[in-house]
Each structure stands twice: as structure tokens, then as C-alpha cells.
Length: 391
Image (cartoon, rainbow, N blue to C red; front, side, top):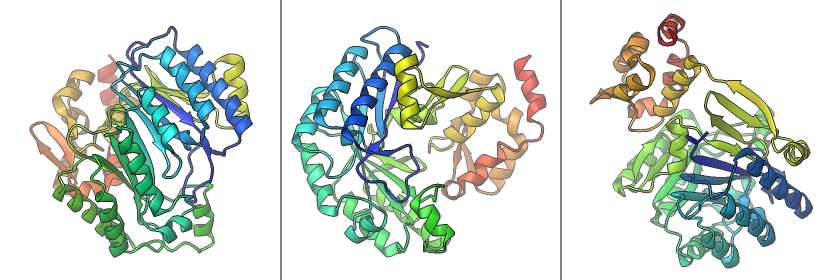
């Protein structure tokens, strides 16, 4: 377990539930949040032995972690400061919502070594923010950036969602340009996905959701790539753009298929040979974490076949792609030995490129990523070649 150097901590509380969100989340209630923090602390303490433990990254997501009040945040951060060596932690990220942080909370986060903030703006338009169920307005975005910069936060990431209901290409271009005026070092941008059990999912089923046409979504993505490039903000993953040196170290843990702990209700972790997921219902999670020091609901054993397939579709999300020599060193067979026909077909279709031993998605491949990834899951002769790996 010494090889695990990344920690994800889930805070499931929100003050309002967005219409598109399917993450594990609950309305904030102070007494519930008090109990949750204690259960979370017990889970982490029982899962990782010792104190002053060295990790490279900590990512606190949600939900909205800053929905917690000052007392709750202090309780949690005091524990984390004892459990982990925050001085040597390279990246400590927390997610916030615009308007959800004030000077007191910003100073608290800074004092405990939080050095990266990711905040969900989604769109720079008050009317559309209301339509997607967001609490904040555009002026809150400006105020939040000011508070963060005043408190010496330099590594700030801003999230946008595009292809929103009734959104035109021109509207997206304006909201993108407004967001880029902040000159932040990192931007995450996602096309809207309609997830089960969300408000948008029920509206879509009733024929009440007007999505932009597919060609408009493609054009939004093209504009996104173009505008980022003009400003020297480099694309390093399908949905992520950063100035050099500001790429998310924690998220690269996921895309590099490296190990990480996951703590909190509904959190996922990846430990040697296993992917684990925690209980989602708040009461069940807290009861199990408090009584047993663990809240694992499911453990999936990862076979070599699983690991290789995950390696492909995670690594290919990065613009750097997957390196053939590194792959062969890790698994004992080259990509061509496993996927010769699939790779050739994707190269001929212009969905992959090959340069200096690196297979990468082309611009077109990024638009059709699911089609590319599915090729590596459908391979007919995979099992025979895996026998060679395991023997």
C-alpha cells in the first residue's frame, strides 16, 4: 500500500442540487454534516496506519466541500494535518462553488496547505445558470476569483459545461471568452451528459429538454480548442486545458491508471489488484464507517485484461497518448502484439496518430473517443494473448 500516493475525499453536501448532477450528494444539514465529518475521519484513520503519512496529492470533491461550516472544516483539516504530511503534499485541491467561499474560509484553506482550487462556474449567464439549477450568479464568479487571488491562490481551475439546453454556438463562444478573461491557469470543460436520476433526465424523457444539435456541439468543442490554443493554454486531456506546469497532478493519477485511496460516501478507490467503491446512502455510510472503520460496498478484482483495457482508454484521454515502450515494459507485450488490427484500423480512419512510439487521439478522435475506446474492449483474440502474459 506504500505505492498509493493519492487521496480522494468526498464531501457529499450541497445547498442546492443541480439539474444535471448525478454525483453522490445530499442537502446540507448541520447535524448530519457534523456526524459525517466524524465518520469520515474514522474511516480514513482506520484505513491508513500511522500519522504524518506522505502523499503526493489530496483532492477534496463533492458535492460542495465548502458547504461545510467553519467549525466542520477546521475539525476535518486538523485531522488531515495530523494524518498526512501536508508540507510535502505537492497538490492539495478543494472544489468550491462561486459565492460559497468568503475571506474566513479562504484563509482557513490556505493555512492548511490547500494550494489548488477548482470551482464550478458552468456558464457565464445568469438566466442559464437558473435553468440548470445553479445557486450562484455571474457576479459571484468575479467575487470568488477576487477572494481567491487576495488569499494568494494562484492555481485556480474553472469548470464550464457546454451543449446546455437551448445553448447556441454564439452563446457558448461568449461564455467561454468571458471565462477566459480571468486568465486562470486551468480550465475544465465538459459537454453536458444526461445522467439517470437527474432533473434533466426526467425532462428529457418527457420531451421537455431542447439539446443543441450534434453539429453545434462539435463546433463548440472546435472553438474551445482554438481559443485555448490562441491563449497558450494547452490541451492535455480530452476535457482539460492548462498553462504549462498547472496540469492537475491528482487527475493525472486517474488518467495514468495509478493507484489512489477513495474516502467518503460513494467514493471510489483503486488499490493494487482491486477497485473499491463505498456505500452511497448517507446513513449506511456513516454507520459502517463509525462502527467498522470501513464503508466498502463493493470490491472488483482487476485482472490483467481489465488493467490493460483501462490503461488504454484512460491513457488515450491524454493528448500525450500512450507510449508503446512504457506499455511493453509494464505488461511484457507491445501494443501491436495485442491490438495490431484495431490500431491499424483506427490509424486509417484518422482517429489515432502514431509519432515517436506514442499513439494519440487525433482532433477527430477526441470527438469520437467512445468509438475509439470501444475498439479495445471488443477485441476477439484478446484472451489468447492474455494467456501468454500470465504464463
